[in-house]
Length: 590
Image (cartoon, rainbow, N blue to C red; front, top):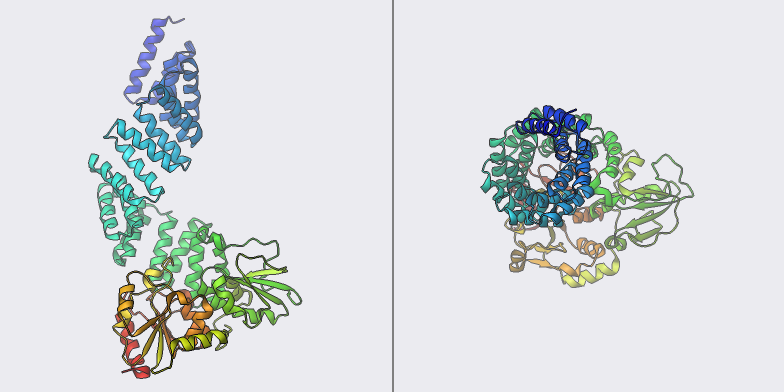
């Protein structure tokens, strides 16, 4: 039997192996010590540390726990056990360990830092920032704390503060690739894409083989419409990590933005082959198919939108069954309910007549601003405002699932010239409000909802339109809301009438539309409204349009009265107005 001196010598041998990085050998020697002296507290603790270094974190928790039981007032024991809990993602237990460590030693900077990691794991980001601040106050050059603090601030969407924290980390460690990469992500969130690319460039210079950095760089380049460079970065990300579904998906989005639909579909298919549950890729594949006029496949895949997390608030959970077009609804009551934007509701409410023709009583639930517009829609027995109590019904169907239910293709789109009508009382009011007509009236819509995912491509500044408008025409703004950037131009242009908040809902806008000779609009709900009223509508489209406008045509199978004016190059509106201006002069002005 070994005496205490021999046990101590074996422990020292283990400890020196540990210091030399011979972790497995050290662990074996610690175990020999513990076989001889099971309550050797330092061997228990360091054996646990070695186990953690060999990624056996459960064993680490157990061994260090035994050391704590023997000596509960050692802050390092609690801290190292907390680190093991963090690795196991048992963040509440980890935080409790760090609480004990700092109770013993309040200026224990590592315990404050590690507690911040635990709290981030618990999604308690404000508290995590406070922990990092405490660690930095104790140790002002704490590189990792500045970096983690930046991550927590990003989670709180405090992007400027996050960038400042990353900058501090980079000051301490100028070759900190991860800090540059995350800094780039924060800059993207602030739409500072040029600066983001510069930050990503630094990251890939330092660490060239991180797929995620190339992917995020490509996303920023895509926003800048630097497509060739973006393509190179996506390709680099996929070369480093061939099983990177997000990179293939976003490459597909870029290909679609360039109207390269076959290439886009191939990218979406590749993403889905890697991750069959990638619902965003399936949805965007459906939109590419619809844009290309492949309605048969497109409508079916478009149902995948119900599984996309960012559209979760559009999903409805009814006990009544979904109508798919296969069930008889003769003599039944069906609820048709809107989803997504106002323009979608206006476009697809036309199917109410087709549903009613199957013998069903139709209830249409829609957003409150549309109820007045839809109250006399053909085929609808009752209009309900979203958020109010609903009457009883037997089936339900989202408006945007009706094309699938009716197996709609390009040749069977229900396309009456007019399926909406303005309120006669509103028409009389707005006719009086406009006064006597002394010149042709042209309605203008130049921007849509700023939160729309494609708003930067579809909306344009007011001045981009006004400089192309001929004289001797009365122009009427059909915008309810005007962006700050356009307010000075609108206020100073006496040739444009603007009513703003006087447009209470879409029934007001409809009446005003009916009093126009022509409406010129970017791709917004007003374009759909005026076209559904059967009025002449000129729609200004970006190079990569929304799927419903298809490609390569100046008319629309959805609306008889629509003319489409398309960009010939991404972001170039001058070519659109070069085509539109002579048409406008010829029809209405000089």
